[in-house]
Length: 225
Image 1 (cartoon, rainbow, N blue to C red):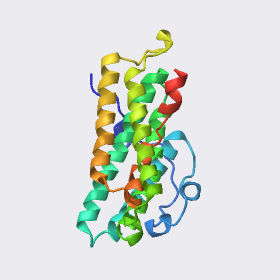
Image 2: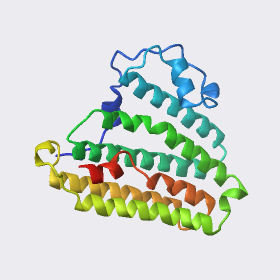
Image 3: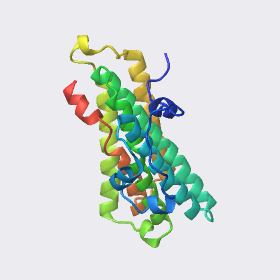
Image 4: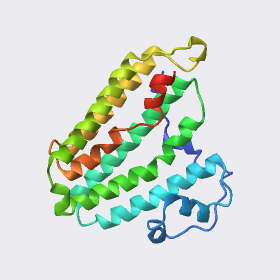
């Protein structure tokens, strides 16, 4: 059995008909719009698939805009690209784990691409901080933020390792071995994010660890199911 996470092509049905879009907007404009405004301008209809596709397109514009801004900083661009990959993998695994915990539900797959715009905003913040003396600021509040993110993630991993469904009848998609394998991969992804960010308790590192402080569905599901 393969790990239960949601590959991008599966999530979005790329290449399949059905998504209704207005004329494309230039990315230079899109990057200055909030997501809701972009979706209202770019989608003729708002089916679940349309919203997924729209979220991905919006994130792609932000990603492209950031890549252009970092063209003269190849090392930073490479780190941002790796963080993007890890953040997306983190959310994909959260969606898959939540799917198993809840006994299914398409909302878990829809939530993953819709998390991409927030990921891009985080990456944009990190790039800005890395390019500014402000990003290297240290102090108790940054240490506290970094510690809180690490502790929240560690507590979530511990709870996931101990989790078992309360209602066996609702555990159609729960396989204990596969679930724990996915938890291990989730833990490894978080550890890779922290390793890439480094140990310096500055503003940029604290900001980069914030996505570990909360998760798609999991914190609620650990007590609900």
